[in-house]
Image (cartoon, rainbow, N blue to C red):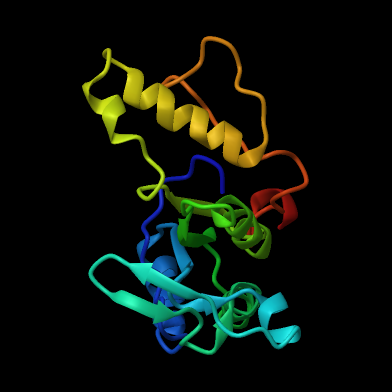
Amino acid sequence: MGAVPRLGIGTRMTTLLWPGIWRAMDRGHFSANAIQNSVRELNPLDNLLEGRPADVNYAFNFGTIETGYTGSTYEGLWVAGVSGGLQNDCRTQYGADADHLQVKRGADGLSRARKLVDASRYYTFFTLDVSDVLDYGALSARPGAAEDHICCARFRFFGVPRPAGLAGPGRTRFQLPIGWVARGARHPDHA
């Protein structure tokens, strides 16, 4: 979808509302991330196929919960959403938001987050929750230090060298490496 303005109106717990969302988008002539997921609600398909138990996650204001309590996977929700958009003849652009992909502290934190990004590789929008790994001391450092720290963390996460002199909101355009993310559902180039 690129820089297309869109609403985040996904129904994270059910697909029952999708027909109404597709109709509203068509009638209102607006784009939306109608396919939305959260680490708290889905499992990677690999976990189910290999019979691994659900990950246990601590989510602020939720407490400790097992992921995947909706019974769906990242991959399955995307397929269901795209299928729903096609079945309902949605003519406006829509996307999929891989929401609340958490980067946690510890030895497995980064590898787990990368696994979730990989499971969400066909999604068109990503929301990374890095609150657990932020260096809050950077907030009291020199002006711009917090923005530099966050920007550099994004580049480290995706294994991309940070371009010299680029950091902070509005000054950096961050793109995932080619091949990591497929084009979004109903992308104009694939119409």
